[in-house]
Length: 292
Image 1 (cartoon, helix red, strand yellow):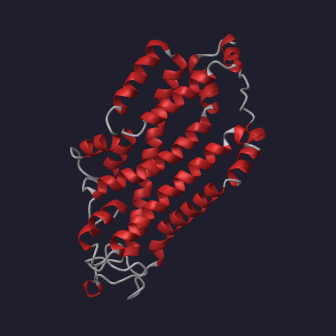
Image 2: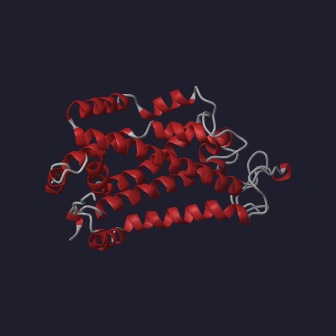
Image 3: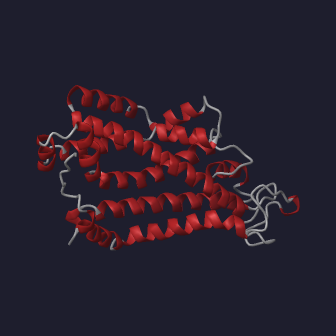
């Protein structure tokens, strides 16, 4: 039977309450949580409450202003309901961001954990590879790769995930290097536990705090990345909406129908700001020094 060494954070129940309490004292984090909850609920329930879907064309009511002709956010040049397109686009943009976050977290955690635990030649080689990837501005790397693939939600998700893991790897590597010097890791080594067990069952659970914070911030960056790519025409392709391509289609109508850009722009701002607020709240809540 494999022995298990209890780490300082192993007793989750003993530390969960003060962490949650600190989070709920963070007003901006609560505001972000409320905003993102409302946005997600609106995106996934809103389309079922509207009379038309995001592809329904009504040329009689093209360029209808918000709250006219039964359209709460107005219509676009083809008479399509902006609210229906916004909510459907939110489903697409949020799903792309969430899956890309999972992908980038997975890559970053594996590379960061291995580099931080083993150090030496292995750690240096992995971190120099991370540095090489970071030497390219991520948005230009993302756009370059997007130009050579067939645009689709799946491909955009893979591209965003494959170009946003480097910062996570750095965070995890630094945390793992710190944890491997702790007494409970020395005890685990003396008991003869394998490196795989120590890395994934002892060290990684104690590094989960920074990873959770990085995950929320990565979602915010992924939403912006998807918007950039789609805005420039390399992302989700019409007629299917995303917040980015809605902004792209609004460019030539800014003076005639400004709501075409304002509505998706506000949605992107709210989503990114909310996740950043939540990330800040989680970071403060998981820092014991923030408890006063």
